[in-house]
Image (cartoon, rainbow, N blue to C red; front, top):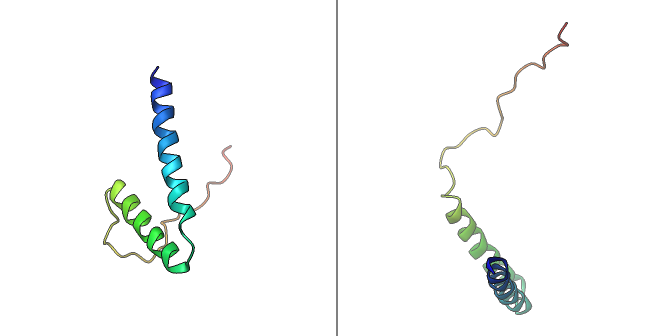
Length: 67
């Protein structure tokens, strides 16, 4: 019962997505859709850090074989 309910929700959401994508026909429309989706995803994960880094992860020497 729950699985069929969730399947119904998923089917409706996928149908709405297909319809929306079907209407995207120009690069401008694509860019607007991409920006809207990015904004929604960033909101869902709680935002991005404003802290600027050099992009380099801390690295440590590879351990030698344990004897």
